Amino acid sequence: MKCPICKDVFLEKTSLIDELYAYFCKSCGGNWMRYEDYWKWHTSNSNLICKPFNIKNYLPVNDTVQAKICPDCGRILIKYRVDNRLDFYVEHCGNCNGVWFDKNEWDNIKLNNLHGQIHNFFTRPWQKRIREEAARENLQDKYIKKFGRWDYERLKEMREWIYKKETKNEMLSYLLDEDPYKI
Ligand SMILES: [Zn+2]
Ligand SMILES: [Zn+2]
Image (cartoon, rainbow, N blue to C red):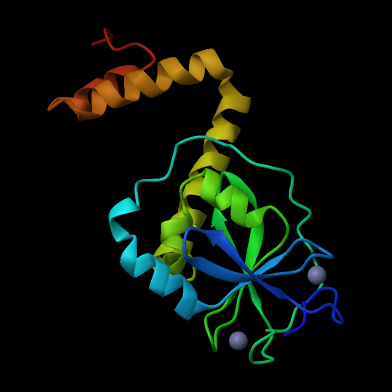
């Protein structure tokens, strides 16, 4: 089996973690992981799978941009974002479910404790959540730019407080009214 990037370099069997086997390219540092190997490891380690860490913790990744062909079945691999804290894409074969990790991508996924979730990465709910989170962060950045961070934080606190009140609507009209004491 040859590397989808280096083309004429043969992949060598390796172990990503414990009993999780994959195929490593010693030329570009990428790893090809077959779904059956992943699932075998996942089934016997499901008790070890914890929640992702809430930190941005990653090694440099040189996300390769060229289109890649599945080393097992020859289909074109599709790029997927994994998490908004990780700014790279992994590549997935929709036919055999294998996954290609460019150099350091696997390590970053593992550092973020997401390696037990790989089977979810390529599902609609996972991808939808990532897009929604990214959109929220984008809006938040816009508000911060518009109001300034300090004012934005105060406004957010006030908003949360008002929206918990039964008199929410009256409070909002009070705020919007230029002169709420005018009869
Ligand atoms: Zn390679
Ligand atoms: Zn394939």
